[in-house]
Image (cartoon, rainbow, N blue to C red; front, side, top):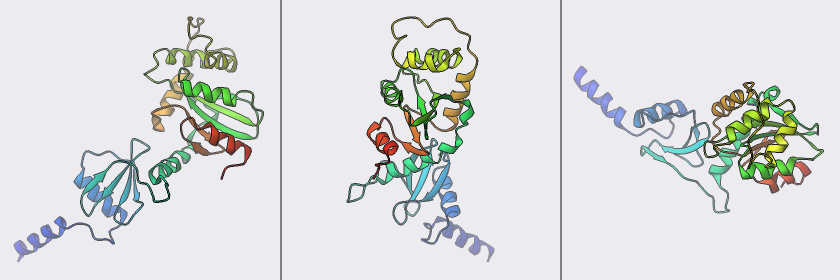
Length: 234
C-alpha cells in the first residue's frame, strides 16, 4: 500500500501545474525547472499561463510552467504596445524612491525633481546634461556611474565629486573641458564609491537613466522629458 501511494505521489509531482496554481507554486516550479536561475521577482504575466520573471534587477523573462519553457524577448500587442518595455519602465519607476538624495550632486532648485544616473564620457549623458543645464524648472540629483567602456570616465567622476565646487567641475567635464588634457590634481573623497555601489545595488547597467518627478524615462528620450516637464505628456 505504501509503495503504491509513493508511486501515485511521484506521478502527481510530474504533472504540469494546474491553472489554479498560486504564485508560490509557480516559484517552486521555476526553481525546480531552472535551479541555477537567480531572479528577484515572479508575478503573473501578460497572458494566461505565463509569468513575468525579473532577473538582473530589471531584465524580464517569461516562464510558462505548464510547458516548463523560459522565454526571452519582447511581447507586443496588435496596437503596437510593447508590454515588456512597459513592464521594465514600471520596475525602474519603482526605484525612484530608493535613491538617497543627500548623496547626490545637486544642481538647481526648480519645482521638478530630476534624478540622473550618468557617465561623464557617455555622449548621450552629455546631451542630457546640456538639455537640463540652465533650466529653471528642475532640481537635479546627479549620480555618477562610469562605465568600463569609457576608460577615463572613472577618474573624471571621482574628480567631479571630490572638487571644491562639484557643480562647476561637473559642467566643465560634461562640456568636454578635460577630453584632451589631464585632470587637475585632486584627492578622492570617496563619494564616487558610494555612487557606484548604489548603481550596482539598483541594477544599473547603462547610462543615461532619468527619473522625472518619480517617473522613469528610458535612455536619452529627451523629447519625452520635455513633455513631462511641460505637462504635455499624453
